[in-house]
Amino acid sequence: DIYYITGESKKAVENSPFLEKLKRKGYEVLFMVDPIDEYAVQQLKEYDGKKLICCTKEGLKFDETEDEKKAREELASSFEPLCRIIKDILGDRVEKVLVSDRIVDSPCVLVTGEYGWSANMERIMKAQALRDSSMSAYMTSKKTLELNPHNAIMGELKARSEADKSDKTVKDLVVLLFETALLASGFSLDEPNTFAGRIHRMIKLGLSIDEEDEEVEAVDDLPPLEDDVAATSMEDVD
Image 1 (spheres, one colour):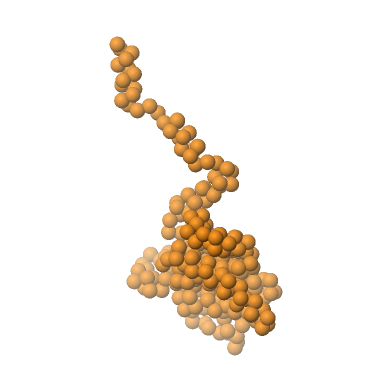
Image 2: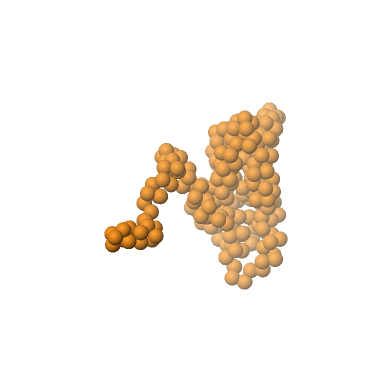
């Protein structure tokens, strides 16, 4: 098999989370960073008898022993409740939530359907001046959120969700993880300001800034109302 990844530039793809397991196994990956490459690989399914496999799409499988397969399946079943909770939180934004074995360090990634557009193709089509919106609605990639069960963040989310399924912190963190996975996987954000607001809130938590204290300071900084100014001036006249 020939493994490849498409993207905007070499810099954008060389540290992609999709390559983590492939790098660990010592596999070579073909970087395709020209827009024409994206069109070419849609038609070129194999080369010299070797199948072309996209690292960012579904269907990426690795050779494993029976013991490794059994351990992976047991781990996947233990994460099923968390997968259901995340799917409920994200709703239509993802088609499904699964446990992945393609990532090593990252908490999660967004992969696309085997026959739909990749994140890079979606970016190219959005940049077309005369694009057909009906076509893009049909081809827009159905996203699958793949979780890394070995990641400490996912382990803690699993523990918290088991302790309290309605934990608001879990919901906030899931949305934040989804949005960061969008960016890391090569997609663009529909609401970057909302994402920035979430990051700012996390920074405040890290710096131990209380939002209530900040609101009080903001009220103190407000200028006096016009009616108060008028009343004060009338008193001065009296």
